Image 1 (cartoon, rainbow, N blue to C red):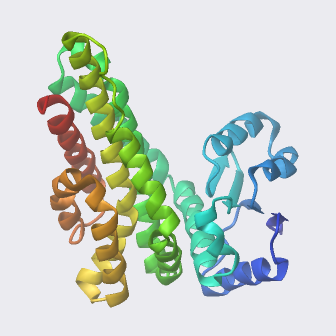
Image 2 (cartoon, rainbow, N blue to C red):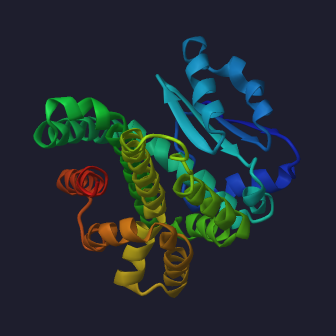
Image 3 (spheres, rainbow, N blue to C red):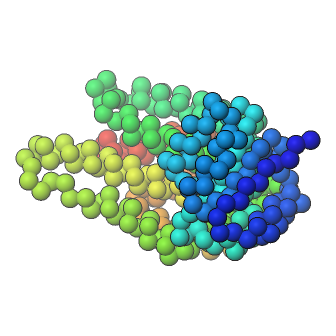
Length: 317
């Protein structure tokens, strides 16, 4: 029998990390096949395990992580790697809050578990078909090229979000939902997170692009910029759904008060930054509270989001 290899690099209390992992093992399990768990607080430490990653996947792993140095799980062939990356100022609570760290690690482990069951592959295939059909039935030939990138980006984000929603619903089922909630709670109530969210949304909204250009040129740019604006707002609202849908479902169906508190906080402080889009998605969110999360639901999910994007980006101009 093999052991999962644990590598800890950075300013951590090693006993704390090991106790956290042991707790997950006792409450749930550590799924088989996990070769590596890497826990770091600076992305430069990624290199410490690269030589243990199978040669042909090394470059891809490195690029995936370096593009967005966040916690993630990566699978290639039989090799599973989990990176818990505590690099941002608004993530430092993970070094002290054991329950939140358990939630985050369990979340990444559950991703691997679902991926091994073929879930990722199925959703990605469904996503590609959904986008293909939507573009075919809604765009004229010339428009396809113009809008393809932004719709493709929305499709990719939807896919991440669906994987996260299903991962969290599964965590709730195995009794680790509170741990994951602890992570979200600390992350979203943090002033630094709020400030960053605000800056990201407003920097897109306030980019003044038409200072000394002709009206025609300006309209073209504005049209493109509006697409980017709306796209950014949609991606932002989507990123909140892995909290809102699973925990909203629990609150609506089981009356869990502490879940309600965070969901209201997200509504008042985050969704308010993208109010129109949040209102557009409200129907989909409410539908999710009473849904079976099957193929039909996922198709509905992509379709709804594409329609919102189409209405806001293509028709609103």
